[in-house]
Image (cartoon, rainbow, N blue to C red; front, side):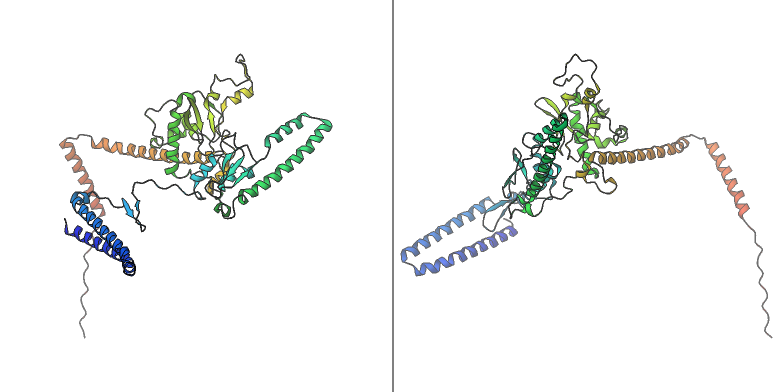
Length: 457
């Protein structure tokens, strides 16, 4: 056994003996004052403890070797003050953020995802929509019911009958005369009632928590929903993943017609660096369509044999089968050969409007872009960032091509083969030109004559 290891073990055993002695000292004093039977029991237990300690020492001596010490990795387990081993390995996964983490966009999106079911959460006014509830730690647990899971565990039922109001509004449009006036009065009453309910539930977003709940003290910042699209280390891998996921469902997106967008430019794909999207060479025929859809925040997926578009910001899902040329909407006859304008517009895939109203890909208010990007939604921000990256790559490529073109004549001249006589003749001509130039620049000066020194009188 190496000397250093033996010294360390002796120190360990001395410390163990000191702890054992300190722990058994009070029991010894108590034993001297108690009856003889109790003291004998104490001594027997101490002897058993010493025997067990000796057995442990022998096992350590037998099992300790140089190979086992070399294979020992630090921080594998740490003995806590309570004596319990605690695993602490370098490769262990990091713990998830706690329930109260208003700084974490990941936990915010996880709470917002619970509101995606239209059967559980019905549309609400903007002041009390799902984004405002998720910013304060609420999740949807039942029909129009939110709860603070992991916090104060309180529940709030949010009941604003928007559907009934819309139905009565349609009936008001169809009525006329006195009935129309009466319906207008009822609509105003319902509007005022809805506004009052909105103000009430708006206060419940904060006051619905228990007084001791941390979510009542402070919620998420207003820019928690902002998508990071400026840094290349963020938008490039995300865009690459969305494009490749859409290429996996290329059969469904090939025949889909999208509504033209003023901000999207198809030429950006040709000017973009090949390393950004990592497409195959040559790229697939559906690559431009996949790039266009991915630039608007959508990714492709397959669920139950159906191809879907998914948004990871608002959790909206769109079935691509409804936008195929052979799809017929329910209630329409397949014998109609000349559809009207409404049917033609219904067959177009609007990549922006299909996002939810609060989605940053559509809503510039929730994106909260700053600086020169202020007032733009996430689609517009990504379009500008990708266009800038494509323009920079195009300029670098053009500069490199120009530099190669300038070097071509030099390489051509160097590749010419001249004879020895031609080389000697060119050298003589060069020397004669240099000699003439030297004679022209050479100026002859007269020698200076020193004046005789005057003799002193």
